[in-house]
Image 1 (cartoon, rainbow, N blue to C red):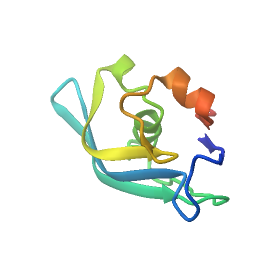
Image 2 (spheres, rainbow, N blue to C red):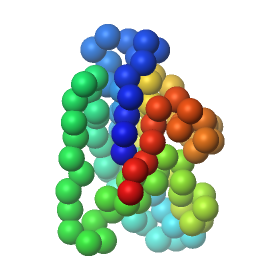
Image 3 (tube, one colour):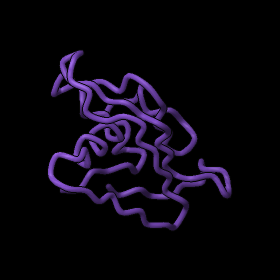
Length: 102
């Protein structure tokens, strides 16, 4: 995940804020529960875990790519540059500077 700072982010506020999200696939399978992280301006954050721990699902939630796999963020909030990402398309996020790099 590449996150680029812009003038839209208030000083001291994290560029990316993932607050207590929950992700469910197929309206049944709970994959993530209570995941939170913040990426500060100019900072680096590592997401570590075993296979199946939810690293990729977390990144897909941030990038709004879950719907393609019948997944939904059902609780919590994801904010990029002070704006909630749930209404943004993946293309809009990329345009704003939030890019997932494999």
